[in-house]
Length: 375
Image (cartoon, rainbow, N blue to C red; front, side):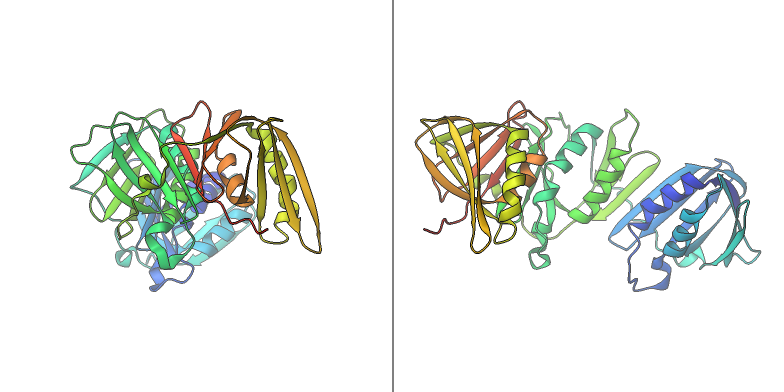
């Protein structure tokens, strides 16, 4: 195997696939990246796989001799990242157990393992398939991933639930304290309803890949009862589905509201950010007070032995005066995932959930449970 490529291309692609390489592999070969050089197509393919998440990427190179070999991911990445020359030559030795990386200023030998023991990435030959625009996929991930749970004992809540409905594909995530739901609005033609949960770790990597996706072609999605594959042309991501029944989150969304408040989103984020300086010193809790007569919302925090703070915001308020408290981080997470100028909050009481929606983007719904106000 021998090829010449740019340092930038090799460095970027190694950084991508290395995210799927386990820090503590149960087999030595899984700590490596599979490198395959193909002479007819003049391309190099890299693969990282931890037997749950797999990432494959392909890029152009001057391939004079094809072949494949697995190389230690971290060592290879560290060396390539520090090479400042524009091009790198990578050549394997005659018995294909090591490679030499050559630049203008030096050369490095890296020992690897044969490719025959590297597990093949799963394929989805039978099952459902659909095409999603990169914009819809990115919006769904951005609007839901932040609300997943970090508690591994509730594994199904650590992922994002995908569900087909009459309105298109729905992304939902909850950690038990908040719920984010995003509807893409894509007209999906699928014979069978989609109802599955994907791990957040894989979806965060997918989000990075889609952000760098430059094609106007839709992302191809193939799935079965165990696996899902996202095909972005020169890049692929495959991951195993999470097991378990996802909670019926739709029943949590109230049908009617007695209070409605409309804010300027950026002003609200700025006020919450300032008041959070004190809130995070204690328990992250802030009180939100609605004053219908003055059309004003007050954000207050009391941090014993530290101090107190208050921010006042103009708002359009319907409904009686109300005091309701929230975890300030939860509010900020949701508001930062919106893109609109105005945001609306609806609620019924100080003990029932509040629902935030960006005005002009009704396909995004963010529910936050309040916390008890101590008097």
